[in-house]
Length: 154
Image (tube, one colour):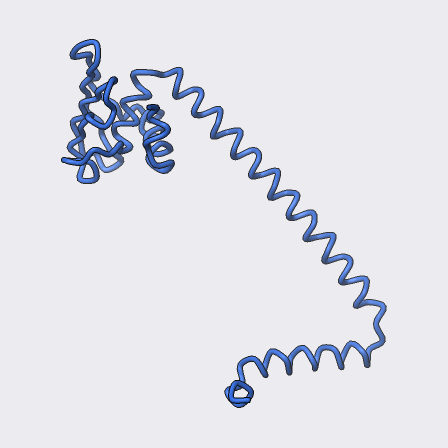
């Protein structure tokens, strides 16, 4: 099972940030399946991480979030990326691609929103002033009726 399958996305992202910021200190290999490291957080607290390559959930960390629990925290993720920098590179490329796609979708949304605004504006601009006033009054009254307790009774 991959670390990416059993770790919350937020922990993956934060762990990647810790890796990038070089918060993984004193990484050393204990044996073929285990590594040990110290990971410093943004407030200079240091946590002991023991990373088990075969059984990821048997990895340990002394942080409050993971201490005594079989979860993968950001500190464990940072150690994972330190052990496997090529995985960090792939993760970063995936995140960049997701962010690029999200930005593209947002730009499409903004363009559609501007187009809709121009359509509505063109329609409103051609309305006679009296029709515009009546329509606005009707809209305001409808909004007021939704808030009116009397109309809720009937």
